[in-house]
Image (cartoon, rainbow, N blue to C red; front, side):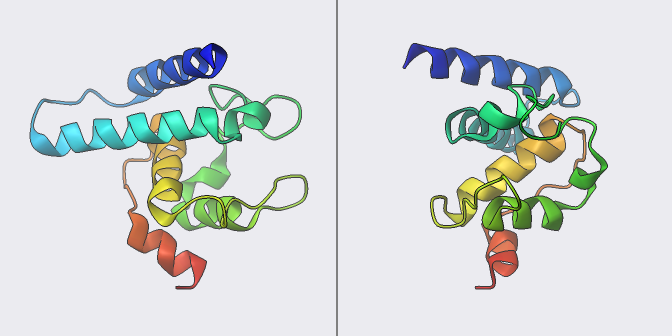
Length: 128
């Protein structure tokens, strides 16, 4: 269990370092909480095992940090939901809020794309 916790802590530290400077008002606290949840899920549900703890790629899967594919939140959400090639689908294992948190971490935490999505957006991509 300890390795997962240390990986999650490392990913969270990278997400905080990569995120724009945040103030202490309520909206920014919510963004920080969303990034923390997304970083933890990224580290624990299998994303980091293939994409690398910091999204740098791990030989099995492409890097997510600096990847133009992450510009579209719909692309990222659909990829997580449905999988593709060697990537398994996570649509049955994760609810819409969890997928949204991972998408937000990949897009904001690893790539600086500031527009966040929510569970409702994922539900639309899921088709529900």
